Length: 423
Image 1: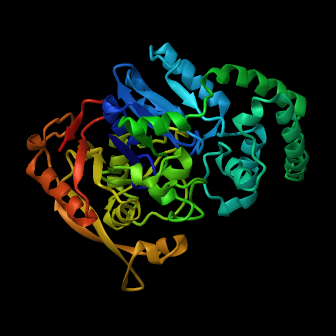
Image 2: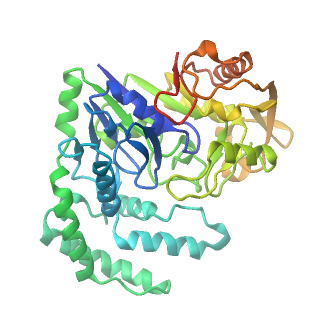
Image 3: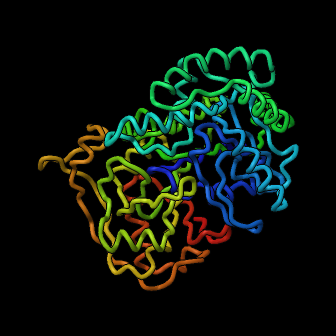
């Protein structure tokens, strides 16, 4: 039996979808336990190319059941579109997807408020995806949320919606928008829940039985460690807990049952949106990484900021999450680079400083300390054996292991499922 947790170890977009899709071939269940459709996991396999936002990336493995657990927030329109997309591609979803009725639902006012709050902040905006994620989590913790449980009871839903619109419409109008109509929302969501209802079933007992029967379970993290609300670059963060401990409340799994924690890391670093980024490259190397790596957000399409590998961040991510191994992605993007750099640490005002000692404001001021390494001209794209990698690539990977303090178990050498090295 193994319960494997997959976590993005940077600012998201590390290639978790590829790793989850690859490992799901031995998984009985894949569980999405936090975040919403602000996540975008890109997968390329025999079915085609997909950007998954809500449905677990392991759904493509025929023997795997996908579970959307209680910690996830749902945009029902997006969820239905994903189901249609998968079915059109020939992926069987019926009876292979379970959704917890405890999931909170993104309502129309959440998306409107997300946009209005960002506009009101002006230059101080945090660069959200605009999907309503922050506002729905805010409602969740302030006892104003609406869950699938509520939608399954029309009377209860109408009562809760009345209360929320009484509050939300006042804010919306104060910020210059037209108030929302309750009847219109009810008609839409009553229709949506009828389509979602066949998939709604509390998965807690199923997960517990799977653990008891020593089945293989994979927990699918969204976003990245440095978007965590506590340990990320707050306020340039996401609304949910990203670190490994968040899997317990988000999926209903006790910490002692998690046997492996894999940190997914790009061979370089990227970030979407605003916020500090010590190793960001604003030169031709940064442009080359973006173009070769196709660094554009799977959720928003926004160009990603690119920079050198930051081992200060990965050391911290490894410690706080308890990584048992790393999966390195996009190594092949460095093919043709004559020189590579690795950030080994930071200085602030001439003194060595750790990531965890400072906030986002000071992180913008640090100076990265770099170690230079030789690049390689031999192609690594599509490599499936470690021995086929050029010696310079092996040296680079060894240095990443040394600086992060964690062994590398997987090396992705391309977008496709089979373009991966297992160590």
